[in-house]
Image (cartoon, rainbow, N blue to C red):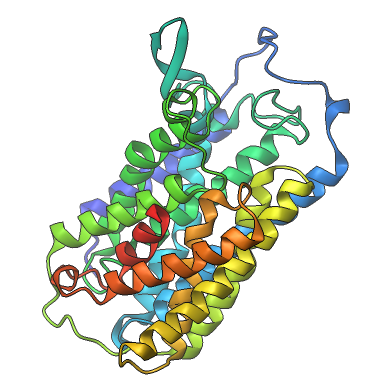
Length: 371
């Protein structure tokens, strides 16, 4: 089989990254900038919970691969599942080399009225995780090792481009998708992550944006990228397909719901009341959205379906994500309800259906995040 130049270049890039990590020499005798606390400030319960939460969030990406894989036609099940799963490899490497620095490194931006507002992190702050050790960071993770914070955040970076794959499923080349993931992660995800979640980030510090677990950083960015991808790639030759494996969709939904507890409750970065609140609102909003979706389908003349129940549950999970630690259980019921109604209307809106977003990523993740 003929090997194209693009595959050789890709292998060389991986080799350079691996060798760069082996021979990378971090600066020694770094000055004490006062950013880190002493090791005795680490809280064991918080460490245990965030370790578990990071594992739960990692599980969401394989869950997403089952969720999407069951929805596409039989010919595209494996390729669609691989598109989600491969993000665990690609984005993890990008995150270690430069992604974490761009997201949470020294804030680069502008000064106004005596305050600094960051747009992106300094790529030289933590290249190859240099300087990311076991000491807690005073501003970002004051009770857990900084490396645990970095790895927890990595799981969010991994699943975001994986979400986008549903919009252009069945019509993108694998090597092109790999390049897209890298570019999206560096030029879209990291600056948005920095502006929302870094203490000096522009959206956080100036505009007061509060995104508890990623409604803006993850779901809205993925939703709008999905819409853009569908517009650029155009329609498939055969845009109509039957879901190939509904049990896969059910399994994927269960894995996503399970992992979402780490996604949302873990974003408290502590074993605390805030984490417990996020845990509760997450499951109630999803339950509310799932039931709303199937009943709303029925009163509009559509059949009650397992696929609809799964999509509704995921919409509820998406919609509660940015506010899960800020709202009450009662409010999460309403958030799940109204988000399911609006997303359902968008999924079935004829004008939006002219855009071949294969698995309705924008209508579910984008609109859910907006709601």
